Length: 296
Image (cartoon, rainbow, N blue to C red; front, top):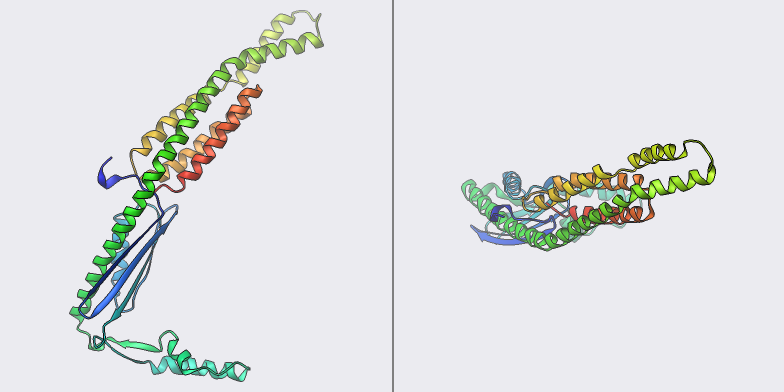
């Protein structure tokens, strides 16, 4: 398996920090399970290209998962002038007067200044070239955080691999058990039908021939050879997918196929032992399906 195509989970965390040109910033990247790749950014105002750069960087690393990034940035003292946005403050004061008239407590100065948009950074005096440089440096820090997130997700993948492999081995073993039980199923069906016919009509003419034909028909309906062959093929496909990441979507689909064959096996079963194996098989497939939800 190549370094660029390592088996990966979808849960992880990464963090990085940076500073330069009168600014300091930090980036936190988190991801959880998701059917597709979704990238969300909460970043500082004034850096309009950062979202585009962030999404492109995440798409270059991940195939699935909900990826959330938070970029917190602040200028150092003197880098950007800070003042009160009078228009925003007036809007809050108008609303506050209405609330006070309705019986609410009057607002405090500290409370008003803490409202979003009241304290504003005046970036008019900031050199646009410097701002672009800061944005590029922030994007580089985003890359570092995403690299850390990717390493975290790959670590989860390393822990998932033996779990998935063990469940696939378990399913393969149950398919083998089902094959052995299915081989005895034809004789069991015939013997059961013969005894029933002998009890109901022991002296009926042509009983032996009728028993043979009816038993053959019942055995054909109970034949699970196709289901067992498909389950064996699915086991081989699952093992191959574990070596060719990213494979999460394909494994999701394969779990549906596994469960379909296991359900059909149970519905066709004519013996208690085969039904028991089929139920164990369904339980193992469900366990595997739950783990596959964590695979990128």
